[in-house]
Amino acid sequence: MKPKKRIKTKDLFIDVFCFLVILVYLILAGYNFSRLSRLEKYGVLEKATVDSYSLEKRWHAGKGAGHYSYTAKIGFHLADNINQICILDFKPARDYAENEKFYILHDLESDFLLPVDEIEAFKRSKIVSKIIASTGLLIILVVLRLLDSRKTRNCSSNKQIKKLMKRDPEFKEKYIRKQEINFRIFIILIAPFAAIWYLIEKIKEKLFKKDKTKRK
Image (cartoon, rainbow, N blue to C red; front, side, top):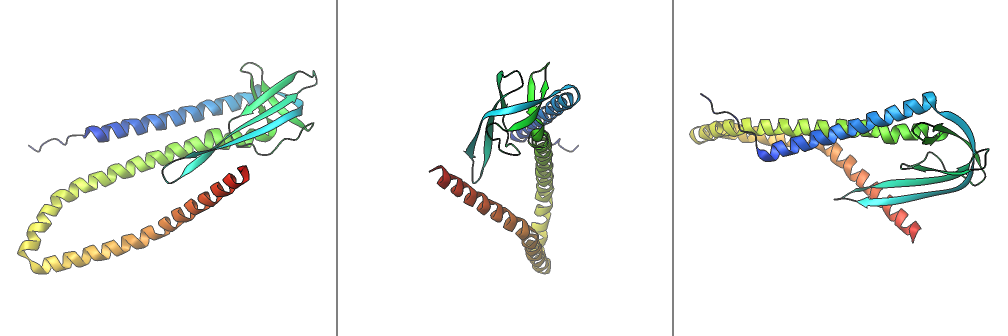
């Protein structure tokens, strides 16, 4: 009987963690889709006047990269002149000037407010981005497991190859040449992706430096 393959505790923890993150992203995407659908179906369309507007932009640094988060606050009043505020935790589609007129949707039951001009931005930030993130994480997880499986298979085949290389010098030369060709092909294939990643990081770095300079 062949010994059963044991699942590493570290791999199991990573798999469970990734699946939980994917599940959370999908739940949030579904929740936000439900909120937006209800708002578009049952929300009351009202004409509002801007009293104040502010946008806070924060940089969250990470290992070799980072991302921005936004908090926009739109102070406004309706025809009844009661002051209200709409807070957006994503980058708005546009800026809002004082005394400017705009249309806002209001779900009276859940008290969910959203300017009409921000519907598409809400979809991108709260629904589409989370679906893309969960899909990307799932693809990375599958690729890692495939590579791990391939590595396990290679370990057993490598033992046989080493034995053949000791016994047959001609086989050894052929195998070394094949490995060199495979390595060159790998470099050629990965080079464009490495170049794109490098350009993205350089652009991020320049944008971050510009933003820091503006703040100063």
